Length: 198
Image (cartoon, rainbow, N blue to C red; front, side, top):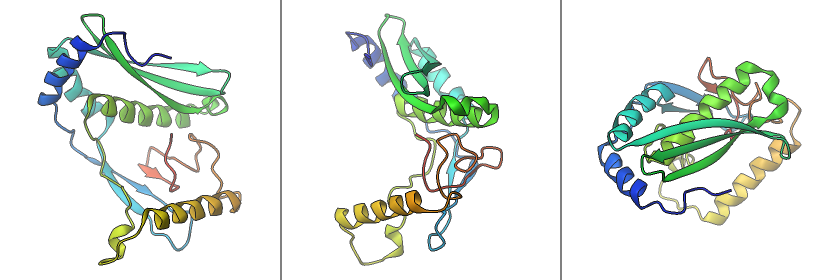
């Protein structure tokens, strides 16, 4: 699937001007990533709600004749609900991104699907226009070991061990899918596992 129109000169210029005006939305909400592993601490991070990001994005992009379009589609072959985010310019040029939301089976739970859809809409749109709506969580455990540098190999090995423990753990620790109640609970702003939605 194409991710842009054949030419993107006009939309690129308009988006560059819009990005000079864009600011990151205020991170007014807090979420917690709960670790399923007893030796790992829970982590919290701040994030901006989709609504505040939309207010900022629409004003700036609108001034430069760029519209935002987000739509969903059921991918029967992959058994997924997918989100497509498009930036469309008045010239007819466009750029887009695609994000898997959840499995088709998870659509039966409107609450879980809605939470995953809001999550996906925020991440996809913020990424496409070039703003940040959440705290950086890159390598959060590095700060716990001052004066010691860890190699990529050490970090990769740790991630693989965590993944193996998650797969081999009890059914309580196993993920039910990106929309599972065990992996994401939006009303309390709490993510219950250390694995992100797609």
